[in-house]
Image 1 (cartoon, rainbow, N blue to C red):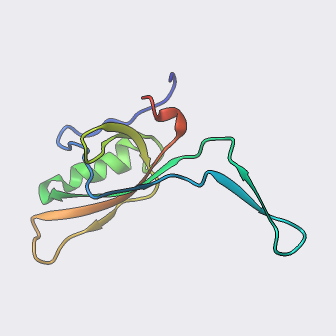
Image 2 (tube, rainbow, N blue to C red):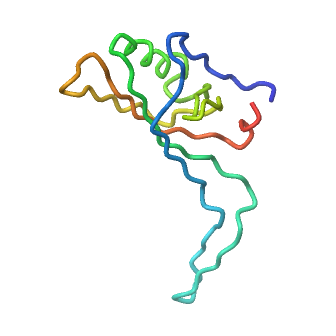
Image 3 (cartoon, rainbow, N blue to C red):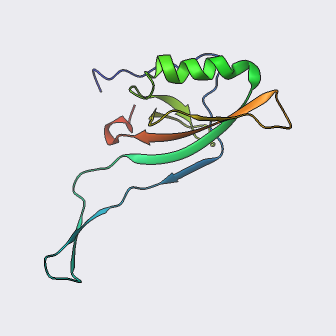
Length: 126
């Protein structure tokens, strides 16, 4: 697809997220009818974005690289980037909001970044 900007991932990050929780968007559109108790249901004719909730645990030394990836390279969620599913397949997705960063009390040498991702239908072949 011409004209799409795919943000580069820092070389220090492999882009693999695990755990990975995905779900298909709703395939139907539901409309409440004027007469109470009736709902019109029809199949969606346009594709919807693929939704994923994922996380990764990284060494503390990679904190700045991860933040730069989101804040600068991905434009804080504007541009998609390449990430890896747990099976190693690389896909193009966009972070939909700022990552949630957690530092475990027991181990200050690592942090966990939780993200929400989406893939627009036209990115599936990139």
